Image (cartoon, rainbow, N blue to C red; front, side, top):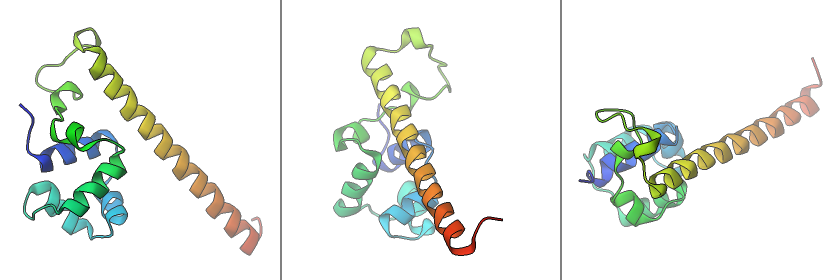
Length: 123
């Protein structure tokens, strides 16, 4: 049975290897505020939920129905053979998202490095 939305958001964030700080920055809130969303301490507004859906590049139904046990090697230790095509497709999508994020971060780092080199010269 799918967990609560806040638990699903936390699981997806962890699978995507996003930090709470990253999510808070993208949502324009504090890390502490974001942590309260994941813990279910504060209610998640529709606007913030839509932003999270956008950050995860997933649809709302997928987040609501998310089953972390399909993706995490925990209690049942599912093997690749026991996963369905849809499960494998979702895992592949998460890895593609992670690779795309890493490529964007690398590009950003390269631009920042160039800016510093242009400003301060090479060492």
